[in-house]
Length: 250
Ligand code: 13P
Image (cartoon, rainbow, N blue to C red; front, top):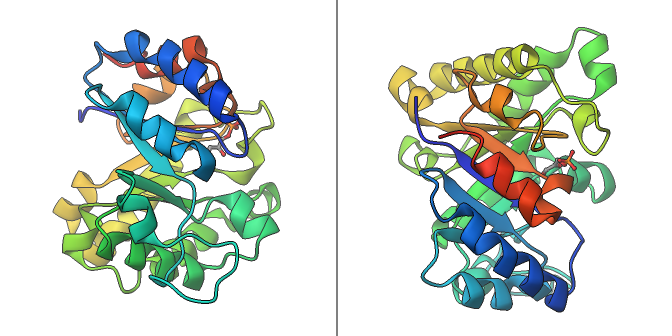
């Protein structure tokens, strides 16, 4: 089994002072892990996060980036603006961006390509809604998100990407997918990647689970064969809880 990549997605939470407190509390709690630890913080916390985590095993990510390097795109951030700060990862296509900000498979692909070109590691999110799952369309939706959202991504680029399978019905609801549901969906997603890139590339690809993952359910999820890590929302806002997720897999 691979070591895991555990990423916290703070979403729109934590002022600079709060970020400093959280990061300082987190550093000693995760320093012994073999897993990769990432915190994806609001843009305004990035500078502070990079500075505070220097020399530690915590990597810093942003939560979005644009597909152009500059221009008239009010409110957007260019990939090189992130790398300039020392940011390593960027979340792309989170379901909240797809739902509230009109993100599509095409914009996800464009942002992913630009992030890769700048040297960032994209954490690309996919996942079905409850309606899609209940109507028997889960595989169709996941298949479309992967085929469309990765259609111009090369095999070489895929090696720098993390995929996060986040069923929309499990995000922020307290309803986690069961270990088996998450494992089965990720196995399906991996089979689509295998079809596109070959078995070896698909096996190497890190595919995380996200959706109400916390200190209580992390061990079960992370022990599943297909689950290569977690993307954690609410539980990443409390140092002890996020550290417990990180340390749930030895
Ligand atoms: P929660 O862990 O709060 O359900 O959020 C998951 C998520 O959306 C991470 O990106």
